[in-house]
Length: 192
Image (cartoon, rainbow, N blue to C red; front, top):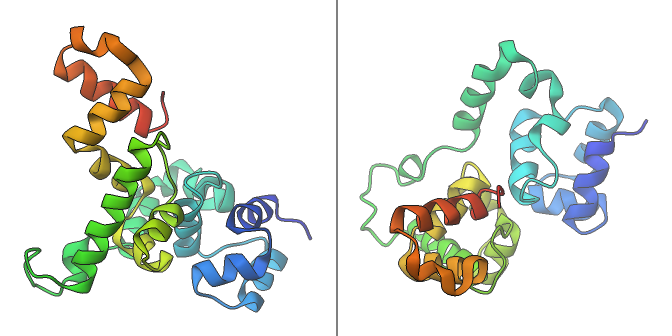
C-alpha cells in the first residue's frame, strides 16, 4: 500500500521511516502499521505537521477528520487535548519558576528568533530545537502549532525589525508600526 502523506513526512524527517519514528518517539513498527492502514493517529498527525513546519499537513494525513466540516470542531478539541498549553505542563507553578519546561520554551523561542533574524522566517520546530539543544518532542509538546512558535518569536522588536528590513528594505521608515506588524505576521504565517 502507498500512503503519500506519510512518504512526504518520512522525506521531511530525514529520509527514512526510522528517522520519522525517532522524531515522534514511536517504534518503526508503529510507522509500518500506519503505512499499512493508511491512517496516522490524530496526535501524531498534529506532531508531524509541527515537525515538518507544515510541509506535511494534518489534512493530508487525516482528511477523514480535518477536511470533514462536521469534524472541524473535533479537530480543534483534538489539538488542544494532544498539545496542552504550557501552563498545563507546569503543574500549577508560575511561569517565573525556572522549571526545565519554561527554560526549554525560552530556549526554543530564542533559537527561532535567531533563525528568523538570519532570514529563515518559518523555521520548523525541529530546526529550532536543534539550535536550542532541546529534544524535538519537548518542542512539539510546548507549541500546539508551528504558528504559535513563529508568532511568539516574532513578537520581539529586534526580530520584527530584522524581518521587516529583509522584506521591505529602506522603505520601512515611512511605514506605520501597525503596517510593519502586519507585514511580519504575513511573513511568519506564510502569506508573504
